[in-house]
Each structure stands twice: as structure tokens, then as C-alpha cells.
Length: 308
Image 1: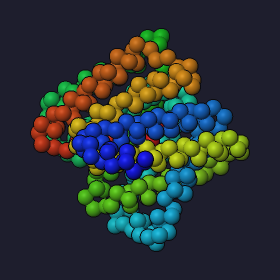
Image 2: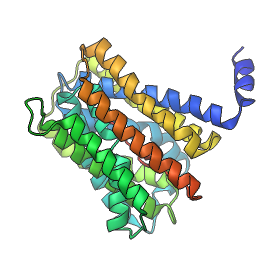
Image 3: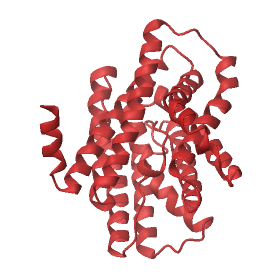
Image 4: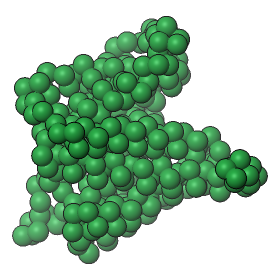
């Protein structure tokens, strides 16, 4: 029965397969965020982040042993180190933000990372950015202001920290882009996982609280779902065209709204929804514009391997 469904699925057009895989991946990452939020209610957020890295390391360890740690051979260790520093700090910020913000708010602010990528790419990588992309980027940040409402009584300073986390994610993505010319994707994944576990070991020990058996089980589920989500996203962009598949990643927002309401009784404000719509619209325009110019836009979810 399973093989029959698999054969039928494999005969579908590539973009439909990619969309289906990305939907599943987005759902997995939403569950990961919910598990992080739940675990951080009783455990320190940096301890939960350490679990995330260590469980990822456990999952990839058989492959490392089978290939005799060949994935860790590189001529650009400094680049991997910078990527790991940015990614680890970004992960810590993301985990903390999930303890303070609604799932929908944290997810929506995370969608600003592609906008920051454009700014960093222009300033650091010296990429030429045309006026339409700058305009769409500016509109995207107007969406951020709509969400944050600075100067109003509804302003939450944690949103600024979430925005900083998105900036760090974008910086890590730009480092990944600079590494892709010479480094294997598996090497980048392994290096990030190993360095992340090393960096988070001391912070986790300092605040260590012994998890219950239930918390151990939820932590294992978090690592498993994150790995599954990452696999789904890789399959999505392998099966379909990036510009056709990428918009489906934004369905993580309604997923987050539903899961946040169901598990945490969270109801997003109209300002969150309007601001998120502006942010999503601007990033979709940028992706479509780049496709028209004959470029390939690397979606944030494909380049950055650390779910938050």
C-alpha cells in the first residue's frame, strides 16, 4: 500500500511534489517551535538549545563514523567557525524569544531574515542591488513597524530582540553563501552541529536542571522532528523549482497561529497579521523579481539549517 502511494506521488509534477514536501517541512518546524516553547517553560532556554545541538550530533554520528569523519575535512575552518558563532547566537536568541512571544509573532519576525540578507549582501558581499529590490526591502521593514507599533502601549521590546535574531540568521546565511563555492553541504551541516554543541556546553552546565523523563522524551521528539523537517525541505527544493516552491514556506505562519492557539491559547493581534502580510508580500516580490532576471534565489529555509 505504501509503495503504491509513493509511486503515485513520484509521478506528480516536480513543483507539486516540492510544495507537498515544503508543507510537511513547515509543519515539522512549527511542531519543533512548539516543543521548544513548551520545554522552555520548565527548563532554561540555553539548556534546551544544547539538547537541540547534541541530539542533532547523535543523529549524524553514524554517518560521521561510516565515512571516518571525512565531512569534517575543510580548507575553510575559519569560515565554518564564523558561521557556527552566528548560527549558535541566533539559535539562543530564537529560543529565548519563543519563551516571551507568541508562536505567530516569532514566526512572522523570522520572515524578515531574507530582507536582512539583501542588506548584508550589498554591504559585505558587494552584490549589486537594483532599486526594485531596495523598495521591496523597505516595504518589508514597514511591515515590521506595523507589527511592533513603536511608541504605542502595545510595543513589546522582545520584538527588537527577535529582529536581531533574524539579522544574525541572515548573517549566517551570507557566510553559507560564501562557503558554497568550495564546501560540501554535508560538511557545513556537520561543522555547524559540532561547533554548536561545543559552544553551548558551558552555558548549559551553568544553568543545568535535570530533565524529567517526559522532558527527555519531548527533547528527543524535538530533535527528530527538526531532522525530519530539514530532510523534507531538502527534498522540496530537489523536486521543484525554488521560485515555485518557496512561497509555500510562508504557510508556517497559519500553522503557528493554529498551534499557538491550540497549545498555548495565543491569539495574534490584527497588527501581527497585517505586518506579516506586508513582510511576506515583499519577500515574495523579491523572489519573483529575481526569477524574472534569471537568478536563483536561495530561500532562507534552504540555506540555514537551524530551525527556531
